[in-house]
Image 1 (cartoon, rainbow, N blue to C red):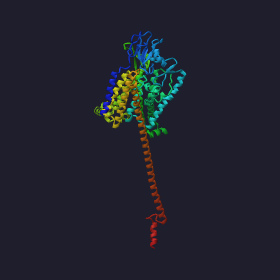
Image 2 (image 1 turned 120 degrees about the horizontal axis):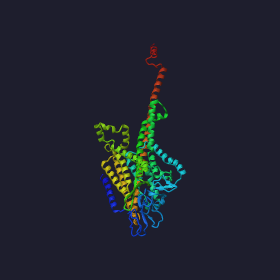
Image 3 (image 1 turned 180 degrees about the vertical axis):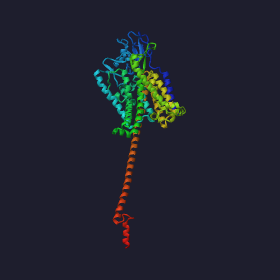
Image 4 (image 1 turned 90 degrees about the horizontal axis):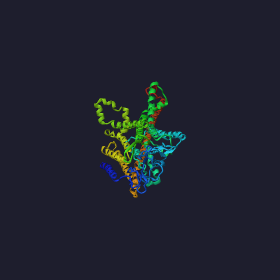
Length: 585
């Protein structure tokens, strides 16, 4: 127990030490160059060549005609990045705008490289919304392709969860699913576009990124979408982000539809005595179907929650446009820098939608934190007016699906696990180094909570969760070192060692999940074999019993026939008496 507490504390202290000793990206000196911008480390000059140096992942330009030079952070993949260094080099004798230089290689234009060039449109199936060639004819065909590649696999996953009654909220998978969702979203291992993997894997860095991104992203309901070639739907980036709400909620809507159909069938049956084969099939499996629907709803909510958080954060996120004094001049929409954050069009169409989902995302963990705990049971028993807010039987069954693996006085941990996702996405809205530092603090606090409170009924699950959280803390700390180290330095060996160690750590939870699936499948297979053998034994036993009773009846019938033939069919009858009289005579 003491080890579980000391290790995360040492990791946090080490991270704080690294953050104070590493100054981050090297800030070139301006020297005596003419017309050299001084935006600290964001935009500066090389003292020897007087070429401009723009920090990776940043945009520089004018937001209005004749306006001052400003700098702002770009979304991942929107602006040009230098994979072998921290800055991109902009020639001092360039004849076009600096903003065009930052956007040209990505087929983008505008403020923060927000818009695609004419003839291009954002791809719907890439994380960075790459600008791909697009026209009206191809976009109409791509809508069919979109439905087949997104909603059909989601429907297949939904059916698998229903048919096999999959439970993802049982204790052994809680921390792993959280780890998978975090690694695929907030804990970005390529340092937000710095492409640190190229130092080790070179041209294979993209393949390595997909090797862990694809299996982990399955737990965000991104079902192999990144394997498909990029395609467009003639929508802007914000429309694509809003459309992803429907993808995340599709399975939930399917469960609601099936529940509504079953409820209507029950009501229709009672009203008109209507009978059909399908109804009776559902009637015979009503309890099993209800259990499957509850398990499926809990699993889909768990898988969709993280993705809904990501969509909401990127839809609502603003970006600061700063001047030379690093003072905020404008606030613009992060994924569409051409729109001011206070713009009425954006506020009505997107911001309102984002705030509604944010409210929903806050209510769900609060609900799991609130119901049910012992002190609340006692309080409801004392104060009658609180009974109206206490969960009914059906809601209590649903809550037990999330909280059943925890101790009775620790059931609120189900809400803490969901709240952790929301907290990590709040950190995701900060700058990269601030995000990684805050994530380390949050993860350390959760390790302390699990170590001290031991919330699970099964003791080994507590240590399992601590192990996965420690892995997450180590990966986060190594990523902080990679992101804050100048990759242009000559001595890259410590950086390479960190990346290799990070690559090993990232696959350990995946190996655990594969082992758990194999063990669980083997156990279920043996259980089914034992049930089948027991059924066969009972069936044979019933056959033996029926054969025994049939043999007894046949023997009894044969005895009666023999007595009839001998005249003794009725021992107390006349035939025996008459024969006795004849014998006496």
